[in-house]
Structure formats: C-alpha cells, structure tokens
Image (cartoon, rainbow, N blue to C red; front, side):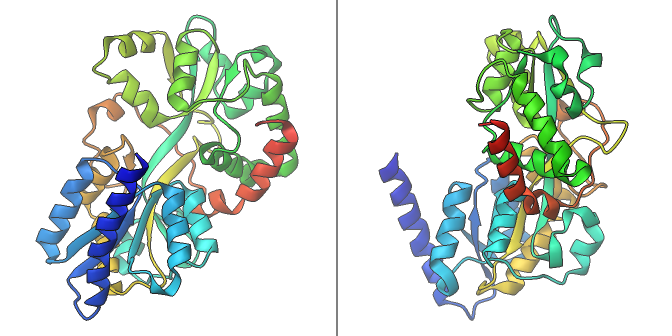
Length: 343
C-alpha cells in the first residue's frame, strides 16, 4: 500500500512539475485533492471542456496534503487545495497556505456563511452531523437535540467516535459558538457519563452499534447513514431496519453541518485558472456533481440535489454558523474533550 501511494505521488508530482515549469501557460491547473469519488471525474472533464484548462492533480489524505503544502512552501506547484471539513481548511489557513480571492461569482453564488474570513476558502458542499437511534430501545422524542445526549435518561446508551476526530471537534466548535465554553464543557462531561463504551471506530461502526443494540444512540455524519441505507448488501439494509435518524435542534439554531471546501493557494502559479475553477465549482451543474459524489448537499441553494437517497431523508433546518468558526474554536474544543474524558 505504501509503495502504491509512493508511486502515485511520484508520477503525479512529475506531472505537476511540468505544469509549474510552464508557468507562462494559463491553460493549466495543478490541483491537490483529498476527494476520490468517481463523480469528480466528470467535474474535471467538464471543466477542461468548458475552459480548455488541463487539470493535473494529486490525490491523498487531508492531513498529508496539508503537510506536503507546508513543506513545499513557496516552491509548491499547487494552485488549489480541495479537502473536507472546515477544521482542516482552517488549519491550512492558519499555516498561511491560502490567499484571499475577489470574485463576484463566488460572492453571489455562495451564501455568506460559506465564505471563510477574507475569502481565503469556501464551502462547496455540506454534510450534517445527526443523531441516530435504535427504534426499539429509544424514543425519538428523547433525542431531538444535541443537548438530549447529556440527559441521564440515556446513561449507558451513547456511542460515538473519538473526541479527537475532526467531525466531533467541528460539532463541539459549533456548540462553543452557540453556548459558550462553560456550557459546552458541562455537556461534554454529561455525554461521557452516558457512554455505552469508550469512543472507537468510524461513523459506520456507530450506526452498526446502534442497530445491534450495543448502543441506543450515536452521532454520525449523514453520508454514512445514506451509504448503509442504500447499500447493495442485504445485511446492511437489514441493520438499517432498526435505526432511524433525527435532525437535531430544529427549533433553535438548526442541525450542525460541515463542508467539503477549497481555496486558492498562496503561491499558485496559475491563479487565474484557480479562481476560474472555484467559480466553476459554484455553478449549478458542478454543484450537483460535487455534492452527490459523497451523498452531500450543494452549498448553492438553487442547485439541484439529484440524489434520491438524500432526498428520502427529507428537508431540515441547517445551522448557518460561519464555516470559519468551526475551525477557530477547534483548539478550545479539543481541550474541553480532553478535560471531559471524551477520548
């Protein structure tokens, strides 16, 4: 696996080096992306057809890409970083990897809360962090809000992945913004007291834990839920018969959502092409491809969803907290989780 990844990077890097060497050419875009969905291939192809700009790309995990960019510094050939989670995008921002972008198209197409500070990066699709529950052991009325996970009534029933994972850190960042640190920490301590087991595994493991009654409730991102519900494996669909989903906090600030996002890099050798690519991602057609590739929602309100499995979940009120706050509060979120024993 390591050798395969090394070869992939070596081949891709050689292609990017050629693009960087031809800095005078404006028909090149060097893209670093942590997205690896087949639908994204249509994005690249359609962008090239529409603009004549050839895309060279490196695909890897979120953190390795950010570290690579930091190490490359001013010599980096990369023009655009596409990655998931506001926390990671914010960290790249704090490293000084992005530059501010002035684009009327992005200002018009993307809601204001999808713009990070100084337009250094943007959210292009959204995913929700929801509560799933076992329909045989938990009453839906008891888990209508994130606050409910701290209710002693759920003692021994709550499952979740690690508190150090960026999905939970982003949720806690949102709660800090809405409630303040003191209330958020009290909530975290009460949730820990309700754990069915120590945090472990990914979101799919949490859903399966709820389905098999290892837990009564869990926090998960919606695309994991949709993957299992629409799975071609009969055993997955059988598990989902015992699980249901709740959109938390519909009567106040709304369900927490995170993003897949992108920004133009500080040393982008093809800045014009990079801005064109972000503007292209904000177009209706690209929004549909970009979002549906991972069972997410378009960030542009007018874009079609075109995803039956997501549409089956119904409409919900999403939190419109600015994406920058989800990153800004993460250091405090991690300290709260550590003090609460939310490992």
